[in-house]
Length: 367
Ligand SMILES: Cc1cc2nc3c(=O)[nH]c(=O)nc-3n(C[C@H](O)[C@H](O)[C@H](O)COP(=O)(O)OP(=O)(O)OC[C@H]3O[C@@H](n4cnc5c(N)ncnc54)[C@H](O)[C@@H]3O)c2cc1C
Image 1: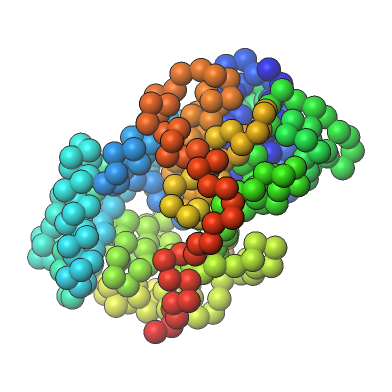
Image 2: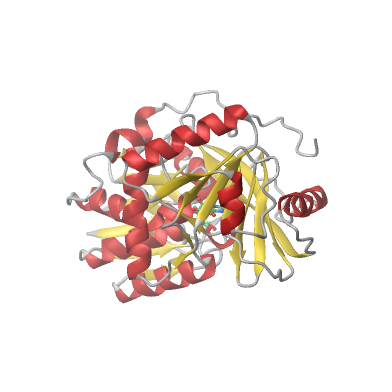
């Protein structure tokens, strides 16, 4: 089977990898460099802390694959709530995760402070601790997936923007080629790409920002504050801090971080720890959203598949979802095939839905 994969991010490369391993002849087309989309800009959080059983199954499958590729670095994940309604939600999440067999426990602020003395636990109502969580290095993920896909026989063409002339006909600047199947994993560009051949996707883009601090001298877990809505992870001897998401037009967005985001994030770190690091570097990237928060991953026309709408979780899910998609294209069994198809079927929407990419896209982050 001759398959084209459009998009050289973690999802496209993961899909190419499994397709190649099952004997397909695969060509990956990437308009720029590998990882130049969201994959190379991700924070790299990777955890199994999901209360939903299908999400937990995808996460467990992805973590196993990342471990096999030697890309998963253990780092416990703590999330906290500061008001009663967020705290009730966190307690409910923990109960759901425990039902899924996730190694997670609820901690009081005192217990959290004992484990992580560098955290300022004042104002925290409750914390969850997921001990089997970890982090990924996005550059290493992209490089390793590309190398492994090549070893499995894929051809990867970078600096090659493509468009679709039909569900299975790909136009590059130099030629027109027809394949048995095409998988479009082009992030927010998936929508305009397939719109050219009459497929309408319920997909929006939002911009997320991140920064890396100067080195800090503290042992900290990955951390998400559900009330203040920001996160960090340890990255080498520094912290990578993220939040500041807002809906944007994917054709017009600023890949640099906003100055307000940097100031706000450093303030948040200072409020939550005894640390006051400076910013080393900051950036932004585009994430994709769907009306129900689940991805669009599956067939949309004869010979055409899409994979997008990861809602900020695409890197951690990539190897599991790439394997699932490849199996779907090749009509082979996959461990997730029992649960996923309805949840992620891209045709569950007709593309005309009105929805907001984020819960509250008008929120003023400087408040
Ligand atoms: C700041 C930030 C932090 C994040 N943190 C995390 C995190 O901690 N954990 C997590 O799991 N996820 C995180 N994400 C989300 C994650 O990065 C994405 O969900 C994931 O990378 C999506 O991978 P992808 O392969 O689908 O898309 P992308 O990596 O965007 O790849 C799509 C590729 O398609 C290419 N392309 C587009 N159009 C064309 C065309 N016409 N022809 C050829 N190629 C084309 C693009 O150049 C791009 O390289 C974060 C995102 C951002 C921005």
